[in-house]
Length: 334
Image (cartoon, rainbow, N blue to C red; front, side, top):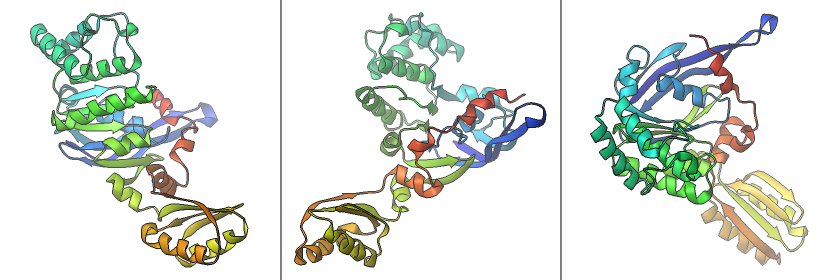
C-alpha cells in the first residue's frame, strides 16, 4: 500500500548570514502492507508530520520516491488523493455548518452523487455512534463527537488506506478509548490499512500491528510492539526493605545475576533484569534467608517509552518539550 525509498524534505530557515538548510526528513524508507495498522511515533521536530504530508501529497519531496496505493506521490498526486482517506490533526469541519451537510458535501467532492453521499454518510454516523447528530453543528458537539465526525469525512468515499494524524489529541480518556474501538474496526470490519501518527505510547501499543519510530528525520526502529519492547535490557525490578542495611547486598546480588542500570535509593534498589520471572523468586529466598525484611517488590515490563529511551537516549515524553521544527516546514518553497 505504501512504498517509499530515500524520502527527503529540506527547508531553509533564517535570513542573511543566519540562513541555513534543515533536513526535516533525511532518507526515510517505508513498506506498509495491505491491512496493516502502523503506528508512526516520534517527538515534535522528528519528521513525523512532514513524512505524513509527503505521503498524502500535501508536500512535494525534496528527494526520494514514494508510491501510495500504487500511485506516485509526485507525478500522480490526484490519483493518490482520490484513493486515500485523511484525517488531519486540526480537523476539517466548519463549525457552523450542519454535520450531515459537511459529510455529504465532502463525498460529492470525490465524485459521489448527493443521494449516495447522504446514504453513505448516514451509515457512517450509525457506525461511529453519531446517531441523531446529522442536523447538529460541529460547534455544538463534544470533542469526541467532532473527532468521529472528522473520521466520517475521511471515510465517506470508502478508501482502502486511511491516514490518521493525532486522532485522539485533546480527548478525555473515555472518548479516547471509544475512538480506539472505532479505529480498530477500520481494519477488522472494513479491511482498511491505517497509518496512524500519535504521541500517545499506549495508543500505539494498543492499536498497531507494527510501530515505526522516527527521530532526527530518520527511521530508528520498525517492528511489532512486543519485539521492540523485547530489545530493552530486561524488566524493571524495584525492591524495598524495612531498613537500608540490606540494600547494598541486594544490589550486589542483582549485579551477579546480570542486572544493569542498578540504582540504590535509601531503602530501595531498582535495576533492569532479563528473565526476571525466573530469577527473582530465588533472589527473594536468598535475601529472606539472610534475615532481610522485604517490604515490597515491583516488576514492570518494558514500555514503548523505554524503547525510545534506549534508541535515542531520551524519553519520548521529555522530547515533546523540544522545539517543533516541523512547523517551520511550512516555509518550504515550491
